[in-house]
Image (spheres, rainbow, N blue to C red):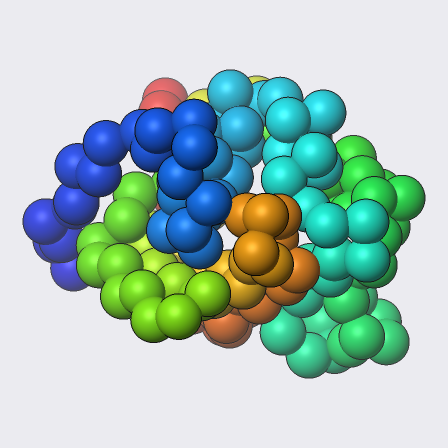
Length: 148
C-alpha cells in the first residue's frame, strides 16, 4: 500500500466562490453525511459523473443530472456508508480544480474499500458546481476485511 502525505486545506470562507472552495465544501458535506448541503452545492442543471463513463453506478455513462439525479446518486451511493476523503494534491485553474485524493468507505462490520481518484470540479460564477467528474477504476480499489 502506498503512503501519502495529505493536504490540510482550511475550510473556505463563506464568500469564496472558487472551485477549490466548492470541492472542500463537498468533502465536508460528504464526511458529515449532509445530503441537503451536498446537493445544494450544485447548480440546478449540474451533473455528477462518478466514475466518468459507463459503470455499475451509471449504466448509461451520462452522469446524474439536476438536483433530483444528484440526490438519487447520494441516496444510492454516498448515504449507504460513511466516507472519508483525504486530499493528496489540489490543482486549480480558472473555474475548475482537480483534486487527487484517496477515498475510503467503511461498512457496518468494520471492513472498508479504498482507492485513489482524481475529482474535477467546475463551478459557475456564483460558485455553484456545474460538474463533478471523478476518475477512478473499480479494479484498483483495495478491500480491507473487518477486524477479527
